Image 1 (tube, rainbow, N blue to C red):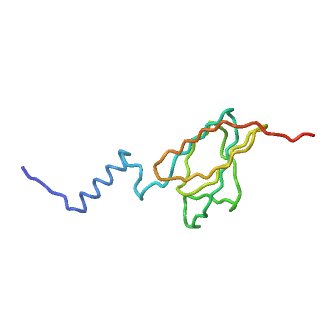
Image 2: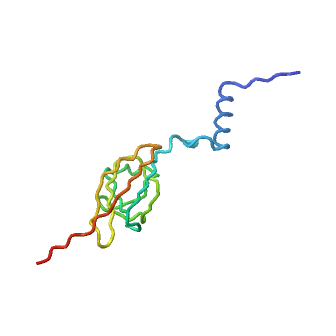
Image 3: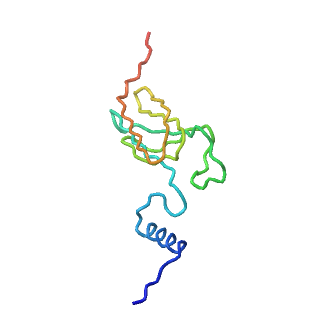
Length: 127
């Protein structure tokens, strides 16, 4: 019986291919996936969730879609679930008749950020 051995490079390539094919690695074949999961729950529900990136990404970052710097964009309504690129984000939550909520979000790789808010009714000044 003949026994063949793989070179070190051949073993590494075989293992990397197996990991990619099986899907057992969240990083994928080209490095770590730099995302965080965001969950926002409000009472009452159906509030709009807006995000604004705190620090600009390099133009060469393919994971960063083009955005107008310094502006919020609506990402969905509560209950909201989505992914964020790693970094700092300003989050604003708005619902008609309620005070807006502003908070700084620090997205860390592989972490789940869960935010729950009890929205406060707007106070309208009357004479």
